[in-house]
Image 1: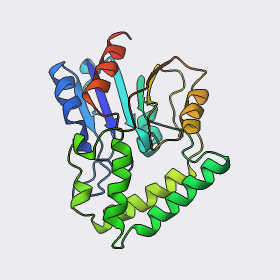
Image 2: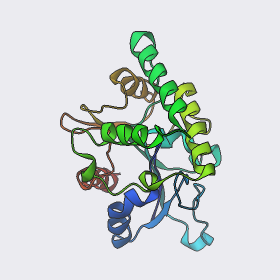
Image 3: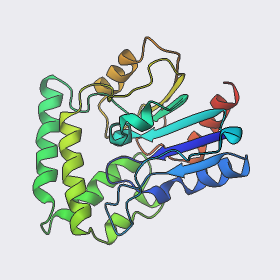
Image 4: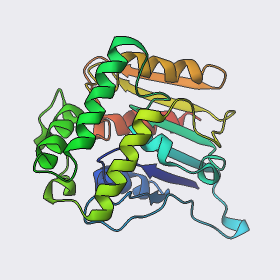
Length: 234
């Protein structure tokens, strides 16, 4: 038996994994999903299901999209026996001119929260995440229906985390197999940051799947097929 735990990224939501959940559960896996609770959804902390000893899963598979890697506590990371990273990074803001530009953009996003520019800012970000496809190609995002006060605070906190993250998070399971999926048309994560993740993982069993036509929103049926095949080969 396999247990899955999925964590979305900044401005994401648990409902985006519905296709993945359906297919993993049909295959007999136990599905767990975390919800940060930026919109109207109730937050769900990331956690593994506890089973009786006789039914312990053979593998705990952690799937994280983008900032989701840095939203996972050490207690969850330490129990993973395989990890899938989709459009993820160790350090989001790179050094040099590119980093200064991205840092300024993050500050602008911070300033927009709680103002009449909040919704346009979120729409612009989600458009970049969906690129090279239209935003309508993604599941409807509840954030565009409005933020709660607590949800806005979480977005603010997680923007700070985007600006400050530097390394693999505490508790990272550094001996387990890892699949990294990256899109070469990612309009959110800089190429330097994507490469830094690969460099940081160079010491452990690593499979890299990089597609020249994919962007940042990698929670898609096509990516699911890549992940499923990798898991079948473990």
